[in-house]
Length: 306
Image 1: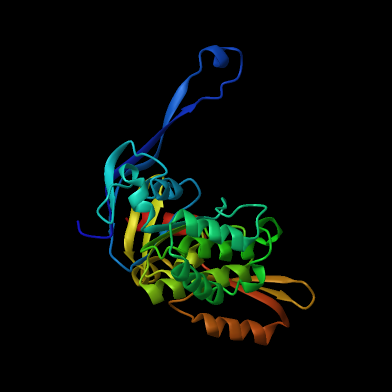
Image 2 (image 1 turned 180 degrees about the vertical axis):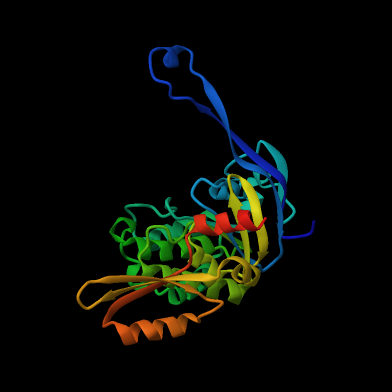
């Protein structure tokens, strides 16, 4: 293998305590082994934007944590820029940026700019280069008005923009994004997706984005790896996934009177634009959304085809 990220037969098992209840479970607890990641193999080339998608509990975050040196695997191996991440934590940290949607790397009570300054010191960034880099990212992610605010005062969408800036300060060659849009509203999701894609294209950053939201995949990435129950069940281009499994769109409109109308469109037979035009002619539309099929439906379709 010769990619910037190389994974071969990577496996992670957890030993969990069974919750049987009763006094016996206190003195003689029973355990079970759960396989979170099951012998997965893949390779990612420099500059690729890869969506690593699947339902909750599929093994996405566990994989990211092994690649970013947070977890040790049970078996198998992985290389990040030629280094085994869990054996070379400090060296690997210089080349990767990480964002965990449910966990902040910013200091809760400090102004955002102070968190950035601390991270500049942690990565031992030269002062002039740090200020130049920060200025560019602040402009790109439109966070100048947020710099003096403590992290605790930010909305979730604002915090996620600042989190991504923090992960990019040391100009990593690889960016791991673990559920970066979770909990965000539609507008905030679009902003995050557009900014991440623009950043990746401008600096040829290799991107591995985990998500259970298929829209993240469609808006940001050019390749898709689908994982379910710890195993990879699809690894191909985004176009291939669209042609084979994303043939439906779910349209929901809200009328002026508050009525909700939902329609499923087969995109092979009817373009989404045409379906929207017909709905607008038929109803007085106050709001509308267009969504991909839920992840569970795509996975079911993949298994059905296989």
